[in-house]
Image 1 (cartoon, helix red, strand yellow):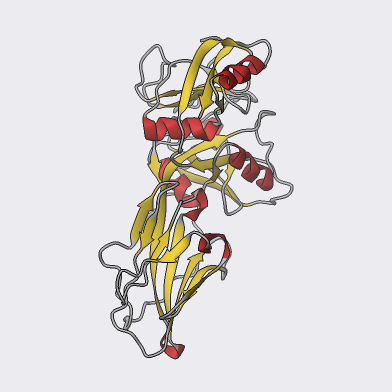
Image 2: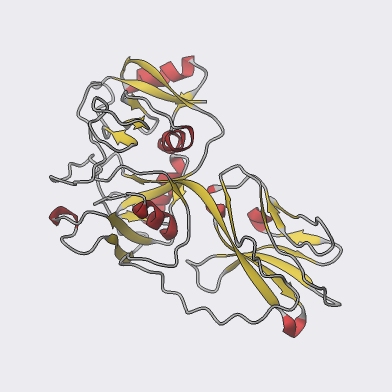
Length: 360
């Protein structure tokens, strides 16, 4: 390989160059909610009310959490214990970053149901038996993760149960080709989408921190707040505060600028490497000759996470960056003992020569 390796590391020693991402190797993760946190930031949510004893709905004692990957079909359980004379079932997704907002997916009665919105078009009632109000969601997308509510509407006796849907995936820090802290919130959201990803949620970032993500660059997450995860406190990363998720809190989405924390999940295709010494344009043509396109950053991370992709060669990606995935760390592949996706940053597209990572 040629060029200077801008690796992801734990020590964080030295100052950051414009294209160097001073972050730890990112272990694989499963997006999750947590009840305990040593992080320095927590959501400002009201304390939950004491739940009343359910009369009509069964508590989801077997599993109140469902896990799936992008593209999967899942079922969120909701079973009636007994039926009132007149009732409706309403399924909603709770949007915690918008207090009081709910995203209605479906409303049904004993005979029919009506879907709402984008999620509703991929949802249906399972109806395995007459007491089954479970929700089926097909072709999971990255932003489908979260808390869902099954509500029985029966006048003054309304009641509900909540189920968490986790999307299994990986979080990665992403920086503009123009250097550090160049994204507004909306640009960060777009940048993640361009790399086959979405802005990470706080719980996804938290899980990444518990799995080893250590990054001095602050980045936007989905609720419009800004954070950076630190495992090993050091002077160049905010001083000697305790390890945790360091928070800048909510920032101006239109004017403040930071990096991004992106989240992606499994891919339907595959990433492969073409050996050679290509300029960026030559790498584009090399992929096209193989009937494929250049790989996106999110696709490379997904291949590393879900397919254990391991390639000890730097290669161009579609965004103009050069990276390589390592699942089996060894001395001559970056010299870092942890698995991860290594980065050379954004080299000059004409004077630097690398292989190519393609996707099909």
